[in-house]
Amino acid sequence: QVQLVESGGGLVQPGGSLRLSCAASGLIFSINVMGWYRQSPGKERELVAVLTGGGTKYADSVKGRFTISKDSAKNTVYLQMTTLKPEDTAVYYCYLKDLDVVSTGYDYWGQGTQVTVSS
Image (cartoon, rainbow, N blue to C red):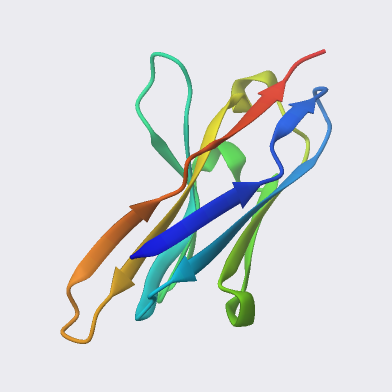
């Protein structure tokens, strides 16, 4: 079982910055994908940014403003968010896909951290 603990959310003014962190712990075999999704009220959960074996993927709406990075030694992923807009307001969820020894994938989600962009 894998646990994901997020931190770094909060209230910020438009144009401001925040950095989210997500630390993974527990029985981790091989991280295949790790990153961030978000969900606003009345909307479906959407991909924000993820790191995969093939590279990095960003939502078009955050390209050039958000940067995802990872500290592999700490099993921690970060999301640096700059030039924040009110439409970035959402609950941000950390996501991890773990592959076991026979390449069966397991999906894990964090509890979510609220990001509110408002003046």
